[in-house]
Length: 152
View (cartoon, helix red, strand yellow):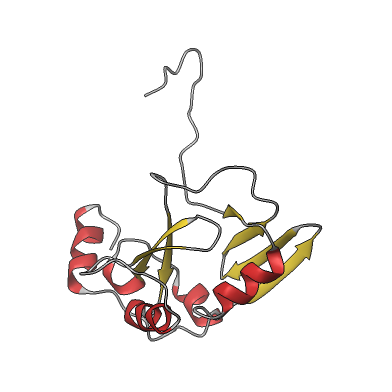
């Protein structure tokens, strides 16, 4: 942990506003990801597309300036992980077996997909309703993790 020095207060991490994935072609990436996920555009600027995820967003930006990701990965939360697995397999995309759902996109980005119900990550009821997901509920194991931290 970093030393506080003379600071009276350190900022607390609250969440992630956005993540940028580098791709070779933004339009191709929108078409590719749109084959597996319902995409809602927040906007475009230059060589970037902003994909809305409620109160967060994903940026697809070109060009790719680094090699494929071998150790790093990016995690997406979905309302139906198994529907995503089925769509990826139907398109011939290699996905990890078992509980895990991992794949590599055509630009070398490692992506891990998790189901909202099964993890601690939580959206407010208002955000879920705004996204059309008001009936989405947490599994008992996710609720237990949240209760253990005093968050549920």
